[in-house]
Image 1 (cartoon, rainbow over the protein chains, first blue to last red):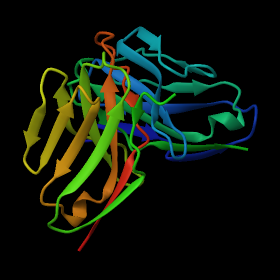
Image 2: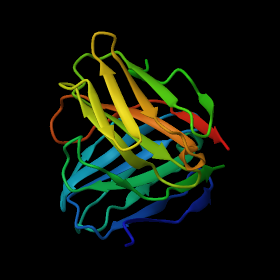
Image 3: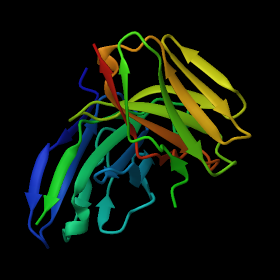
Length: 114
Length: 114
């Protein structure tokens, strides 16, 4: 079972560059999420989606955009990379949005902006 | 201001002994609490959760206790095994419906020594 797959695993960006972090899940989950984890910190929700075509902002959405054209894919777009976006990014999915429902995470993308 | 606090950055225990990881919170309206485990270079994995209407939930070697009056929960691992060595995150869910806007603690790194 692939679960949640994120690509790339590592990336170095220059200030002002753009990139898309890819996330795909094969569990037919409706809910998908993007989190970032800064060094020594907990996870913070960037964006989430409750189904194809529906997205909403989380706690720290500035500087990011998302789309959800299919149930499987939930890419995260950085338009103008800034050093403050240096972080580890995790994509997750769950069958429902109920907090008691297990969320499955990808392995993460370590992004450095220089 | 941290709404979910894990005041011990690290904990070391002997194999076979009990591990107790603590978590304090400030918002009495949180309705679910979750524990996730994270190995290096992997995404978090769900461990156990508890509803705010309960004071204990048990799953094999893992038990979570909730003390609402003290706004405190703890995760007990008995007996501890070397494979339990990981970072443990406490997370809380505010009553905002099915959108999983979890508030995460900073994590406690557990080392179980053989």
